[in-house]
Length: 631
Ligand code: ADP
Ligand code: MG
Picture 1 (spheres, helix red, strand yellow):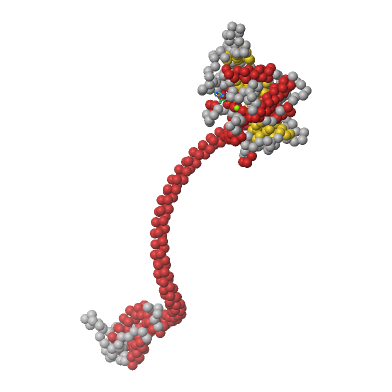
Picture 2 (cartoon, protein in one colour):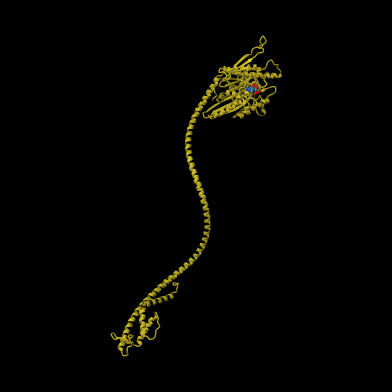
């Protein structure tokens, strides 16, 4: 490296360079002149030297000029030595001093010029030398600066090396990191691909969802519009409903009024006659024994009349021939000939039963001799055949169903059932359970409270009912209770009145209306009289007492009805347990229906006529306009 050279050497070289430059500038003519001079003047050959030695040579030339053989100086204007054959002038002859002097003067002049030139040249060289020295000095300073710079650069280089090393390590580390990052990148790219795939899937799903959403929104807005219009419609409907409700209520009240009017027109006391069919094993009565003549409207009209023909054996003719049969005609609100179905019978009383829901007390009696079909009519036939279901289950089913319908108009009804029998003027609970089952005598008829009109039977069960199953269970229980009390001699059920009472309470909270009434379904004891011709044994005495009690209570019932009909001030309710228990459901605001059950057998004609006469009397009664028990 040139800059790294030692300063001394550099200086030397710098000088050489200067010399060379000086020589090159002016050497050619100088050397040429000197060579000529040397060749001419100096005999000994001076080794050719450059640089400082040149000045020495010049000095020697000058010396030689003084001490060496004198060259005749050629005087100005003096003739130059003659030329021989065009060659170098020959040496002036010794005698030609003048010529020689002239030559020497010429030569001196030349030397002086030469000296002057050389002095100039020397001066020039010295200037150059000074300049070179200055340059060298500057170069030295520059060199030092450069050396310092070099050192600094070296230091920097070292530092750079160190940095490079650390950078290399860093690079390695980074390469490693890059490797890891690349691996990671590859994984990420793979993951990205997966994610892109997933994204595409999701985008497709999103698109689908958006499509669906749009469809849903469209549907929703459609639905909302529909809802709005439906709401509007509903508001209209609600207003209409309120209006209809008002109208319905008005109509319901009107229906009740008209229904009641109709019942009144039909009579608040009505009597239906029902003739049971001839049972298997029973003698067939003569065809003319019972007749059912058509009403004024012909056979299409439901029968209301009954004719009983009676042959009185005691009234024989003188000739011994039997007296002609006496015809007894009866007319009732309705006559049911044998073969009338249970549902037909119920159809006729359904409206009456409904009056109980409207708040009118209702009493339905079955009157007749034992075996005439009272229990069949009230409770139903044997077995669980729905065809032979009696009035009690049918009436309750009807009430439950109508109450449910009225529920739609805001009425709420509740029903409480009780079932008692009155035997020999004692009251017994037919719904008793447990140890009380079959026991009698402990029940009493009492007012529900001081000053209360309502009557209640002490120790009797009052069971809330709301469906026909519950009613079925109660009828079954009553049947069991009767069976426990039954003895072989004494068919007690025929010798007692069974009273099924249903207390109905209705409420219309919206209008603050309440109504309550009881429906009484009474299966009366057999109305047959005791045959006075029969001998009175010990058992018969009891029977007589029983019969008297029955007859007394039945005639009391008749008397009560009569008294009510005649609007007498005193109604003899207290004369029998039956009328006492039923007092709130008889008279004034009550509606009454009596079934007179008739046996189709000729042998029972006497009892049948008795029953029919009793019923006819009842049928003639009219009890004042009924008032619904509205509170
Ligand atoms: P009562 O209660 O008046 O003593 P029942 O109701 O026990 O009379 O009837 C006596 C018999 O006649 C029973 O066997 C009953 O099934 C039957 N019976 C009553 N009425 C009818 C009728 N309408 N149809 C068929 N059988 C009847
Ligand atoms: Mg009976």
